[in-house]
Length: 197
Image (cartoon, rainbow, N blue to C red; front, side, top):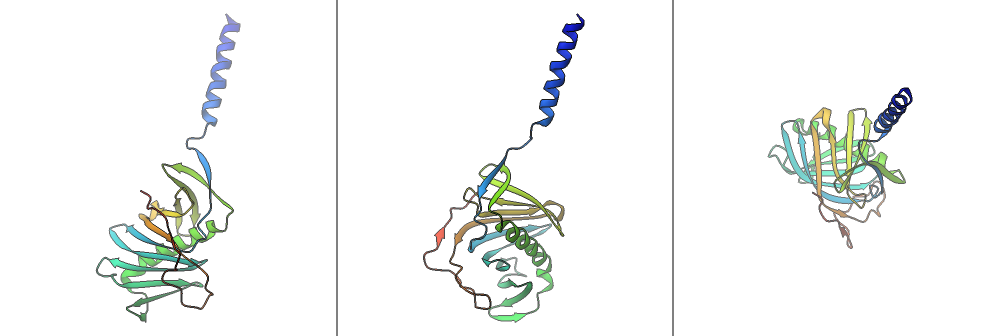
C-alpha cells in the first residue's frame, strides 16, 4: 500500500511540475520588415483623444505623421528627424501645438520601439491571431508592438498610458534619400501590403 501511495504521489508531483513549466502563450519568430520605409493610415486612441492620419517612416529616426482628425489637429504635420520635432500646417512651420503634445510624446515612443526592433535580425514574440506581439519597455512605460505575417508594423500600444495605435493600408516605399533631403511623398514601384485586422 505504501508503494502504491508513493507511486501515485510521484506521478502527481511530476504532472504538477510539468504543468507549471508549460508556457501560457506560444512564442514564435517572424522575419523583420520594420526597417522598411512605409506609409500607412494610423488610428490613434490616447485616453479620451481619438486621432487619425497618415504616418510615414523614411528611415531610422525619420518619421512624419499628418493628422486628418480631430479638428484641432486636422492638417497638422509632425516631422521627426535626428531627435528634433517640427510641426507644419500647409507648408508653414511653427512650434508643436499644445493639442499635439500628447500625441507627439506617444509617437516618440512608437518611433523608439520600432527603430530599436528594426535593428534585430528577426522578431520574437507571442502569436496573437495573424499578428505577432513583441513586448518591451521604454522610458515611457511598457509597450506591445504588433507586426503582421510579413513582419510589417500593424499596431502599437502602451496600456499604462491608455495608448492604442493601429496601422492599415501599409505601403512599402523607396527610402533612397539622404538625411537632410526632403523625404519623398511616395515612390514609384511601391508595394501594397494588405490591411490586417
